[in-house]
Length: 532
Image 1 (cartoon, rainbow, N blue to C red):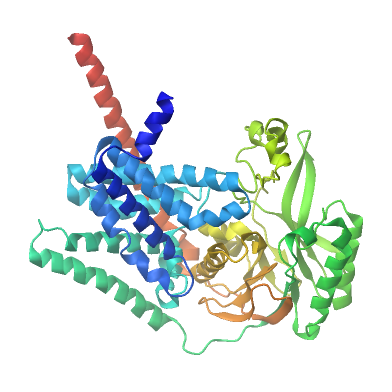
Image 2: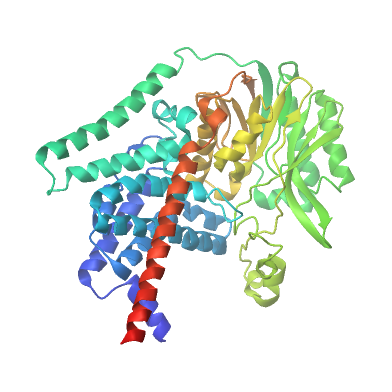
């Protein structure tokens, strides 16, 4: 009972003022999460951190760490709550773990601020950006709610990512929040407070001006024809054995509904073929017949499995069929959603696999709890060729990784294709967040993109983030259009995520210093006790 009491005191401290501060932090976490919502709300990100920064700098010790975790926890909860539509345990696990990242980062900022305020304010943009870059590393990676994506609907502002990347834009957003904090610091001179406010406004104005200058007034037409299929098949129907043939017939009709003479590639959504393409001969034949009937290559999402070290491992995969219906290429999704699509490092943590857990947690089957899947990650990026052009095949979550998407372009992709199945997220903000991440990647690399989603959002987007052709959410339709072909690299594509790497390096150095100081103090206390 003592442990639960201590946990409760951490969540709800006895100090009434601290309770109010935490309630306020939860409110601002909600405001910051709202910045990810469609269309107009992105402006909230430019000031939503001001009050949390001011609150955290007034706390210390356990109260500081608890408040920092409180903010990080609720920011993630409000931002990715919709993951519970797929797997409630996975959502809770992700929120709890990622919230800890924010707690450590904000704790370091506040401690630096206590030492020297200028050091804390200078470090915060690097700490936050370093955290975002860190979240792209390892199999625990979950880089979904990067602050740059709040600007996904402001195309003028978003153009800067072609130079400094999304993490560079995050750095600027946090820096503007820090500058606005200075406006409210009464200990500063009136002149310094005014200058800080003017600089923060100037940053946003310059970003708008850069985008206004660099975006072409008259959009250029694409060169290579693609057709995107959106069948909007309900999940319970897609995986029903009785509806397999109907599923393929629906995609056949959608493919036949477009003018094939203008199409160089047909794109089906993620797992559009509800089978194991590698081992199901009938499945291969049905897709092959559709490809041969249209006389064009087809890029199709499906599943695969292989025997690896004595265990059958399942893959979320995509396949390229040529115009004669022959299966030529396969790509396995390499970046999987942790605690949703797979258990990170499942070769070393087999006790977290679904098949193991359901032996002991019987409620998983009894109550039909959506637990995480046990997909296995692919090993690398690769590109596919239609015979005319080369394209990069991306599956769902992979678009959240700037450096990984950049690999496809550096390997020769002339445009990028994303297939996804966001039906899991229904009509939640997750559908729109995912879409705007894809748009951001296209601007970063100045690449055209084609996105095919089972129930939307399906569209063709140009290299400046403008959507050219699209299908309404949950419509059953096909759309065709032309994508442009990449002929030169953006600055970001050439140099990579410099902002993220530099910020992570500085964050790592600061963390090392904090750990060294902590050990030094701990050893000093022990020596003092021993001497007394």
